[in-house]
Image 1 (cartoon, rainbow, N blue to C red):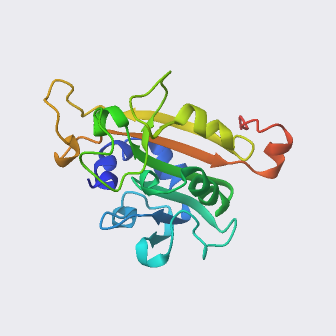
Image 2: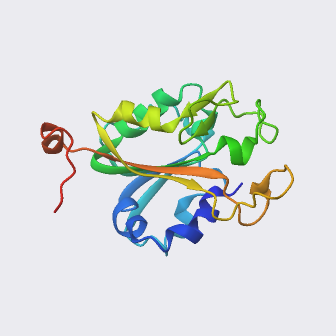
Image 3: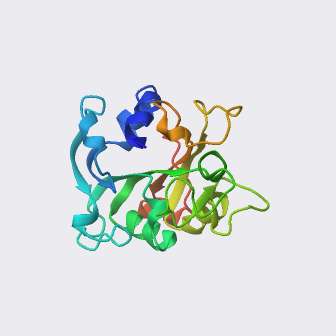
Length: 207
């Protein structure tokens, strides 16, 4: 799928990634052979990135990563493989310093699974994701507009976007992520709130 590499076409044109989200020391969860570290030239404010994959332990818990030790966490298409996505998100936020950013991409259930679950294209997918629907065809659907607010006491959602700019809706059913351009996903960004902002009911500072 090479989700991280495909995302570069978008992210290099959005200064939030280069000046806010990917800054200082981070972790790339489930990066496989497509780590964000390979794009250090494009994200020059990154000091270090730990590539976390199966040999490092369960990505749902990140047990060896101390609380509040990192400035950012990135995950490209790993959350759908977690047994308990809520536990995973809680731990991915746990390892962040106050003010740190969590950047996550997941497949969109209509663009990727295209109406069938278990997934036709990846039999290890345990969940499907949608930004919002009143009802889903998937028995394992997660509505992100319901899930992300569950963490509003500790983090603010800054971005939630359907990645369909390069999706071709008129093609017959097939895995479009096999093409060089289609992402078929959803991207969300969360910011862990510092204590002073939590005391102000999580209000985002304007300065």
